[in-house]
Image 1 (cartoon, protein in one colour):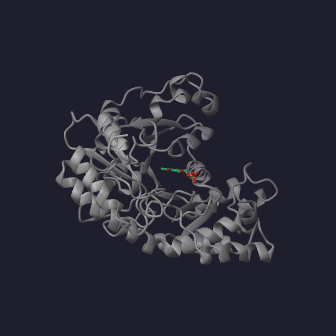
Image 2 (spheres, rainbow, N blue to C red):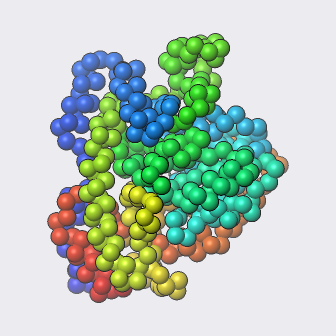
Image 3 (cartoon, helix red, strand yellow):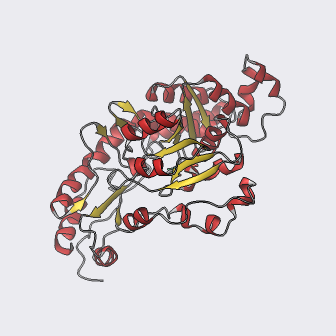
Length: 390
Ligand SMILES: Cc1ncc(COP(=O)(O)O)c(C=O)c1O
């Protein structure tokens, strides 16, 4: 190792998630109550998320993947219909659609917001295109003005994957309210973690009812519509959240503003220093309130040797790395054709085999640790190390 420059311990400044006696009491109260499957806290969590996001309907799920699955089911599309989705995202933004015979059409990402590129999406629209998945990657709201205009022009539904953006907003509209259906993940790394959990949000009662029928048997019995006849079967899966997770998720949502404020302050402080050294740190324009699920940066020089910079930083104690999601269109599940066995589309080929811009830009990104807690001085050590090595 070179002479270390980052010597302070990463915990506690970088430790996440953060739980205290309030979280413990919330979980314990469910355990002591005894109803560990359908406790009222599930409805309380849904109510809180509906208010938080300004939506009419919420349905809690056992994880974000299930909530996305419910979203694809809710749209009631036909096998072979196409859905635009960025390749630079976690697999759950795309793969659940395959179970309904829907075809993911992978798109380029937009360079400065990292979400789907509206111009590239436009090129890929066909008569079979019915919806788009918008992901606000790493906590940065996507190019909503252009994406919404495109969706309106071609009558496409929007599924908003807001898994990284609890507390972010675009033009004062909260993430979670920017899609026909919006989804949060409450998985343990997320900004409001519940252990495992997911929230399905919509203003459309039919979409909500289809999500209920897919996976929440308790709620089907309560429906006052003809769909109640499915109470003895559901549509074949079970995706209800566990009350202990719901209790945790509820408390973490209450703490979100405080948690986000501290995380944002740390990341913005370091970003301002790194900007002076030639890095793009994705500080948002005025109409966007961003949050930081993860802290990604990129050198402004496209020819900068990122791999060797990461190596040099690691050699002095920096915990930096490449972004953690591999690009979906390059994964064996797609390149070797396995996706077709789930989608039951044996004769279909995916049109997207190369995304040159996303591939090039993704390779330039550098992932820093998150700094969610009070700074113990480590931010200055990172700034110094960058200044010496960049
Ligand atoms: C962008 C994105 N979408 C969806 C998910 C799926 O959420 P979960 O892990 O709760 O199933 C995740 C995270 O894990 C994610 O990062």
